[in-house]
Image (cartoon, rainbow over all chains, first blue to last red; front, top):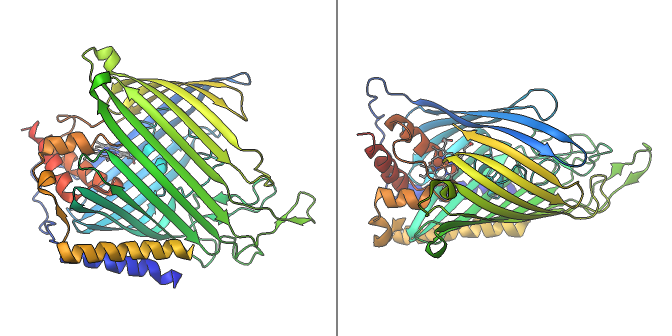
Length: 374
Length: 90
């Protein structure tokens, strides 16, 4: 039953869209002389980190995005990621996603893509959108939740009166269960290949309830019946993930400012049939594995004042909380983090960030970073 | 978990049923919005909205399609917005 649900959903959605007016212009727009279908965008980021344990310039990230609008129906997006955080220049294929616009309400896509799981990863986490130099605890490295997936999906937006319903659904390889001593019970959320014969299904339904389109509320899920490597005793360990997300902004004329509130809660549950090998190489153990992470962030930018300097300033605060499995090798007490940032905008997608982070399991840290979107 | 999949499927059926009855439609209030207004509202939700004049016409089409996919924007909104953004180049 589970296996066919994505197919049913796809079918239903294509019916919706088929009966709706199809206004995609089938004829390929005639290219004018010198016109192009290809563009490169992306962002670069450099940061300075200082705390009682270490001081210095941190990783440099350079992420070009390649976009081709082959025709009004065919589109491809690809992002390369060059990062130096690991001590050498690591090259990664963040995504390469081929999209086919069936009609105004339905786009099908295939490749490696950022699944819409919550709104942080793939959207609000982008260097020029995130007001902080780091990720909320539980949302970055060592955290939880879907990250990059390989497979196929369908997405679109359906207007109903003042409201818009946004949907995404996908079938992908899904996360791989890790069983090594340090990471037992964690997952590889960015695997390039499949590790057994089970696929993950997931999706997000969101609503933009206000005519001013300044509020988006989303619910996401992902399910994979078998996450362990094929042929291993943990092959049949399942994983269920859910997320709810919020993104709202409002101009407040009394303060001559724009207020932005974003937040997300993620939860996941690993099947209880997992058994891991302890460091002694003999003892088997298991633990309750249902971590949860959430964050809430607010920022205020006096965007409506006349003074250019003040107009480009933004003040932000974020609280995040990561409840890890108590008995996991990567677990323990919940981690909480309070972050404050003062940002200065140089362009719509370029900014300087000065951030202070007080996290329960790390020394207090000061970050200074610069992000250029291009 | 099954419950969630069922909710998801039921939700899709509700959308299907609603749209069969009414079709996807926008209210008059939304339909009357100009490209400039839609730009100010939609393109500011996740990031600061890029200004008209920032890109050439071809690149606005490329970005429009990218955002339609990345941000689940409606095609009508994207078309009105890109027309507005291009108007600064003409």
